Length: 315
Picture 1 (cartoon, rainbow, N blue to C red):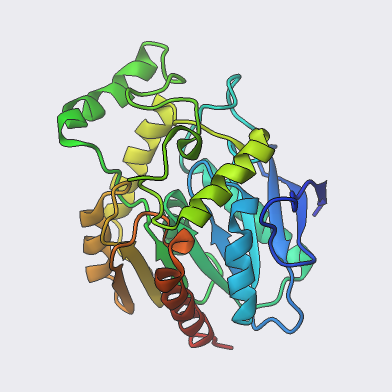
Picture 2: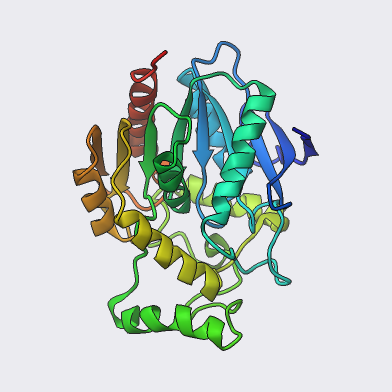
């Protein structure tokens, strides 16, 4: 596999020493960025699937925490975000033509992991939109031995007064040639740059909120605003499709904040109730970004991931 060096920004809240980013090419010729933080003597590698609008550098602190628990980390900029190929003329609008396209990114990431010889076994840690991508991936045979999810996007929360429009506009607007436009209530400005820390929906940890801001201020090319109507249409279709499929036969834990306000909670509860060998852990007071929460919330989750992953190593 042809992997070439890519930028990895280490000036603002860097991950562990020795981190590396590389360009990989998908089966449909999209250039995506993958990143990994090696660890001498690692007991395995966590494949970290980030959420919508996220980027590799955001998970530097998580990679540090996983390294302290004996695990190496690999992550990715999905197509349309981070430094991977943007899909629209306006790079600040999040977009994908079909949600299944993200599986091509997963395949490229797995090829890169194998080419780099990253320590096996592999484990999945998937957040938000990455949880949606990751659920399909494990349903379709992703080579991991256990899966951890945080705030997974298995349903999209829509405010009650917007629900009638949310059913119609994602289908109607693309038919009118407006599929690349932003839905009402969204902007091209990244959430952390437009919303104050007070009552934000991501984290109750102000230092983590500042980290996200600092990274985007230092490297605005990582920024992404709201999603396109087509992204929204495809996301709604994907979450509906996944809800109709049985959970895979794999140990899994999902962590969900009790103050979750971004993804829809009932589909997460329903999924984990039916997941044999899976369970749901509620994080008291937690917002959407469980891995970016206050240390008192974050540490038990990270310890739980270590136990889940290292306790399910099979030959």
